[in-house]
Each structure stands twice: as structure tokens, then as C-alpha cells.
Image (tube, rainbow, N blue to C red; front, side, top):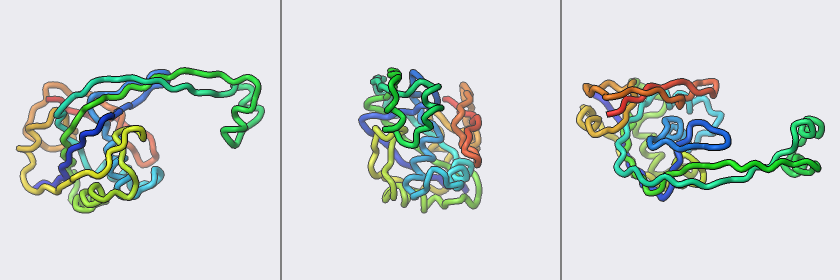
Length: 212
């Protein structure tokens, strides 16, 4: 018998960014690290808590994109001192960092998706996960910290999560993307690698994502 947590999210903006500097693109599909971070925030875990990595290893994600939404973009300006001056002043505050004469301003772009909605199935991969599915579902319904869809500018609010037990293969048949670590009879049309599996030392490892 398998056990999992099912919930949907539908918010005005989401951002599923994996990497980028001047441009931070958003994938159409949520990153596993973003969803683990969401569950960790609901449970009240800090970013340095080692149980975040265990949470990501003990569970896997299947997701159905209900509505792809529309890609939108905004920009941010970032100010920073010249490297030589930065090393000289060794600023301890942002005010000190920008108090030098030579400050550079850089424009960076961020991608978001507007009007997207998703249905998630979070599947327990081990018999005794660090947090039981009922604990995770309860935390998502009554989160300790605010929940976000990838970025803090994309708040979610409460999530109506439910625990599902039994044969999950029928639910997985509706997924558009799922973690290769989840046992299922489905045969993907494509498998891609995503660097969004957090390790215990806070680095990110490759995860294989199956696509319908």
C-alpha cells in the first residue's frame, strides 16, 4: 500500500526558477526544492534545518499542470560597489556597502507565470519518513510560516491538503510530470534531469523527472 498527500494551488503568480544571473527564467513545472521548501515552511523548519533535505529524500512529487498560465517578466535593479572597494571596506551592513563613491547598478530580469494552477501528489518513498504524511498535510492546512510559490512575491496562503492511502497508480496516470523515484506502471515519453534535489550539505543534486 502506498501513501501520499494531495493538494492543489492556484495563485496569481508563480516562479519556478532553478538558476540564472541577469535573467532568472521560470520553468512551467514546479521545482522539487520549491515544494519541499513550502512543506518545510508549513512545518516551521528553518532553511538550515537538516530535516529539509530528509523531507526531500523521503518523498517524491507528481504534478498535473491544470492550467499553464501566461509567462510574464519584470526587472530589478541591483546596486553593488566595485570589487576592489568592496574588499577594502569589508562592509557589515547594506548601508556601509553602498556608502562608497563608485557604485554599479545592474538590471536583472525575473520571469513569472500568471494564472497557472497545479494538482500535486506527494508520495512517501520510505516506510518511515522524517515527517509522517498526516503531519505534512496538517501543516499545509495550518502553516507555521507563510507559504510561497517559488518566490516571496508569490504568496499562497493555506493549502487544502489531504492524505491518500492505497494504490496511487490511478492518480499518477493523470500526472503530466512525476519523479522517477516514484514506482508506477506509467511509461514516460521523456525523462529530463533537474538540479533541484537538496542534499544534506545544502547543495543541489540532479533529479530525474518523467514527462507524460
